[in-house]
Image (cartoon, rainbow, N blue to C red; front, side, top):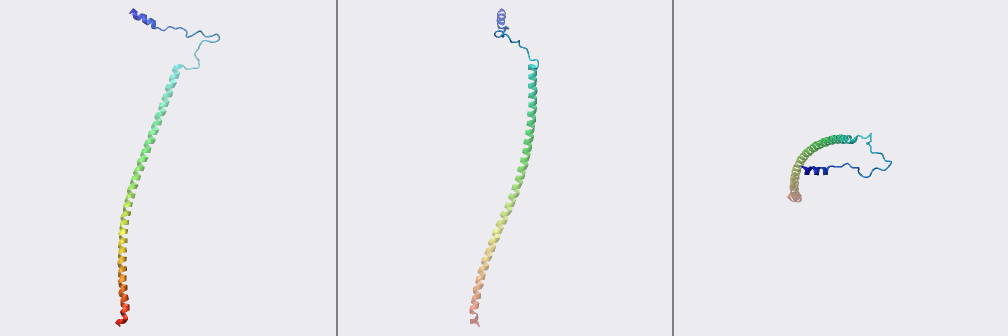
Length: 138
């Protein structure tokens, strides 16, 4: 025990003035009467931190609401565009069917015109033959 008491006495801090005494003309240090002290400064820091936290929470809530609104608008837009794509795909398919039918009808008409043209040529030949030989038959 004596050993530890000697060590404890050696570890005790001694209050000695730090440095030489102040020169003449300086007054002794006094706390500023207007300052609030360390505790008031800490309380001010705590209240500022709480205010900043509340503002950050409000900002985060506003940002979350804006994000949710954006997601809703985006989903609605995607749904509308998807419906539009489906409608336009149906219109395109109908137009392609009409195009195929029209091409088939055109080919049929052209074939019929060709046949009629051939028939006209045959009739014209037989008519020419009849006209040339009409007087001989009489």
